Length: 349
Image (cartoon, rainbow, N blue to C red; front, top):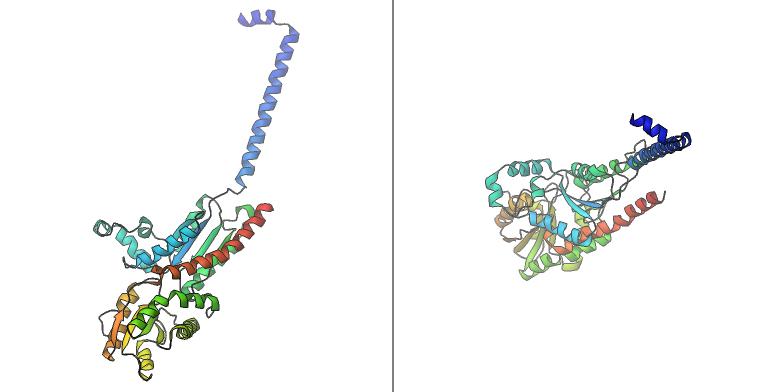
């Protein structure tokens, strides 16, 4: 009845106009919906502007006290790169497993309240990088916290190279489009002159401490069983040039070991009978506390004492030295513009 009343009230011309407007409205609505759908599809293939990130990759340590060296480097990097998120990664499988076990130990956590949560959940570099990219690609700088271009750095650099070369069918979906890796402290190859010089400056406090104690400075590096040790010998030469001949560098994994250094010192006329021993490592971890300064008869300290030397051990990692930590900052500042330039080029294209 209401329809008949309305039909009588409206003329045919009015009905035609209303139907026309309704049809036009439906058409416009459909068009808008189609455009929104198309825009949504396009947006799915556009890169988001995400905050860049830095991943600091260290071998790691299980020693609570030694963690401060790694955390100091992180703090220095964060201060130098305030616009970046800074993450840690440990390359040692064994060390990561130990921290995961400690994460489930309420007594350990209660006894060590200052340990950051990220240490208990520490990942390897590949996992950290993948987790960072979960929300989309972003600019990434990976910095090695190793001393020399050894096995650990080689594996890290290989990982970054592989991720950088990983392509997708749609270039815009490439997960790691802007990534680079910073060199170890002494540079790549057999050590680079400017970084050897920077290391000499950073190690000045140890050299002065040895001189004040009328002692030979003996530094324990990690070393490699199958890679060159020339970076260590070149650093030793640079340290001797700056601080005198009573500087010796040995390593855990390759010669020279403690007995060889003892023999070398004993050959020097009027050589000091005192030895100031320190780790040439980012952390004063297990190697420093046991292999170097331990009470066992095969520790470096014990071997030197058995040979008649008075031994003082400095148990602090290089990472606690701000001057050494800043060497890694310098490496990051070198790779940042390279990666930024690549991103800028992609943004234009």
